Structure formats: structure tokens, C-alpha cells
Picture (spheres, helix red, strand yellow):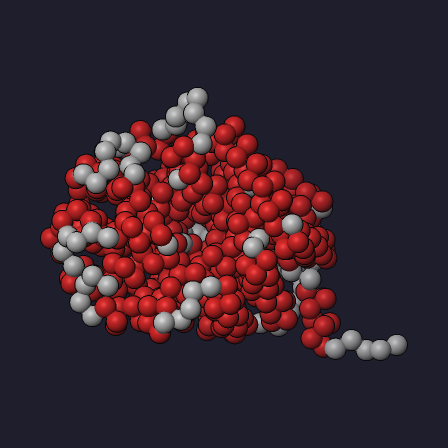
Length: 527
């Protein structure tokens, strides 16, 4: 009988077959359908997503606001001092590393891509009032802050916080199934737990592959401005291959090396570009825009958070707010698992301050600088940014940087920023799929990391070539409804567990239940 290679043995030993195999089968099946029947697949999922938004848009709006209220309540509650780990546990990562990796995975590439495009589009076509007016600037920034501020980070926190709590404090697997422990107990190791992990694995891969595929256009745009690189599928496939290769090296290197280094470098680069635009652009206008927009956002916050247009279907809210809420919710398992992995040893209050307040403020500053510069050019300058955004959103950032000094230098830095943010999205996404499909092991084997990193690039490249990326994007959004329900269940379960924790003076309540549970013994694997 032929002997298996050591690499294959480690791969199979670490794999959770009831999660890995169904997830891989679903991904392969969708890629085949998306490649061979891209238009039919796209229309089918668009019909499904449209039905979900039209009938459950109110539920998305309410869920996001409820989760934000829940996270704020936790921050001020008596549970805020509870540590994500056993008593005396110290953080695994320093604050800068923790914050950098958190933001890079959460929405780093998004704020770069939409930092100019979204404020400009709202300025030209605002949901309220007349476009291209001083009032339209306020509305544009208010809704941009709304879509990228407290609500999405609260959604991420609502899964990351309980998962970190159950894993580091109670020793449960680092996988979404653990969030059901207060309700199912050891049932999380059965069919229900497997189903949740499969859904989250597939959703993560679809989301990251979509981001990688569609985002290749922005990198292509940057290289086009710098080197005259042709714009098209061939160039974008080459870029996907390069980004996937770098992401694979990064994820195999692990959190403490590749992912942490790239994330810290990119946050530093983000701050550098922000500071340069602030100083080289219309500085006073940008500072006034930030302060004014922040005040207007807070003033209108209750209304904006719960505003729905009853009796209407489609329209501005469906295209923007409900699209974002679907995206953030469907993206939450990926970001939640990754952020949970980073958060060992933090207190609940410290976690919320860093995962909710700090990135929200940072995002507001970025949008005020980049988006504010674009709005200034449109309102008081030569204009032309809106037309470029309408033609190709990927060019929006480069169009603004072309209007301030040192455009070639800033184009180089912006292109590098986009590339590394895509790498950090890809490597953190593949690490999450690795952890979930290995039964919640926080340090899955390198062979499995390699598989999922390559799978993301392969899925993105294949569907880009055959024209199925839009179908993949829409398919990933349809997971938002079941995930919204799951997030509410997770919040309820966390409250139950925290009350028991507090009543027992911090003695983990699941400890005795886990001592003799053979399923809980995570398989040893290489770092």
C-alpha cells in the first residue's frame, strides 16, 4: 500500500471533513455554473437578492441599529471589564499590530475604492434635495459616514466579540458554530454547527474572491496611469495572479510575520497619503467639512439609522444602504473570525473602543480628506471628477490625486496601497477559511492555508474570465438574511453567557462541560 506524503497527511488530519468537503463542493459547483451559465446564474441570484431586499430591507435596517445599540450597551455595562481569555491572559499582539490587522481586514480596501467615488456620487445625485449644491455636500458626507461608520463596525463586532469570548475564555472552537453554544450546547458539533460553518466558509470565499476580482480593475487603473498598462481582462487576470501569489506567501508566513507586517505598513501608508492630501489640498475646507459633516451626521443619527421608505421598492436606498447592509452582514463571518483571532487578552470595553470607535473616526477623516477634495474640485474648482467617477469608479482616487502636487508620487503610493490592501484581504480571508474548515483551530496547517489562498485567486480569475463575477457578488449578498438572524442569536447567547460568567466571578461556565468532550480536542498541527 502506497504511503501518503507528510504534507498530505497533515492536510487530511487537520481537516474537518463535514465542513471542508461540502464547502469545497459548493464552491466548485458555483464556479462551474458561473463560468458556463454566467448570465442565467446572475439573473437568478439578482432575482433572489431583489426579493430579499424588497421584503426584508426593514429587517436589515433594524438589525444593524439593534446590533449597534447592543455593542454600545456592552461598552457601558458591568461586563465591560471581562477579559477575552482566562484570568490573567495577556494580549497576543501589541495595540498597533492589532488595530492595523483589524482595519486592513475589515474595510481597508473599501475606503480606498469608495473614498472618492461615494461622496461624489451622492453629491451629484443626493437622496434628499438638489445635487451640486452646498447642501448636497452635507448630505453626501452624512450618508457616506452612515454607510462606513458605526453601523458596519457594530455588525463586525457583534460576531467578533462573542467568538473571541467563547474561544479564548471558554475554550470553544474558533469557528462560527461556537456562537450557538448557549443554545445548543454540544449540539454545535453536529449537523447544525457544520451547516453554519459551511455557510460562513463559502460566504467568506465568495466575498474575498469578488473583492479580488472587481478590485483588480482599480490596480489596473493605477498601472494604466503610471505605466500605460492596457485596461482589460488579460491585465486584470495577471494582477489577480500576482496578488494571489503574494497573499499566499503572506498567509503561509502566518499572523506574526506576513499579515502583521503588511497591515502595519499599509496603515502607515494610509496615514501618509491622508496627511499629504490634507496639507496639499484645500486644508481649511477639508477641516471644516469634517467638523460640519460629523455634527450633521450626529444630529441626524436617529432618523438616518431607522429611516425606511415604506411602500417603495428599489430606488436609492436599495442601491446604496440596503446593498451595504447586505454586504457588511454577509462579510461579517470573515471579519468576525479574523478579528476574534487577534483579540486574545483584551477586555470587552477595550475591544469595543478599538473595533468600533477608532476605525469609525479614522474612516471619517479619510472620507473627509479624499472625498472632500473631490467635492471641492467639483464645487469650486475645474470639475470633471464626477464624470470620471461615472465612467469608471476605479479611476476616482487617481483623478483626485492628479489635481494636487506630486501626482506621480501619489499615484505610485496609491497603487501600492491598493495592492497591499487586496493582499491583506485575501490572506486574512484564506486564513479564516483555514481556521473554520480545520474545526476552529487558531493555527491551521500551512498546507490548508495554501489551498484556500489559491482557491480564492482561482475562483476570482475563472469567473472574471468567463464573466461570472457579478453573479458571484450577488450570490454572496444573498447570505445576508440568514447571517442577520444568526448575528441576533449570537448577541442573545453572549448576554446569557456573560450573566453566568459574572455570577460565577469569572469562572468559565463551560469548563466542566468541555473537560470530557472528545470533539472539543482540537487537532495538533504545525504553525
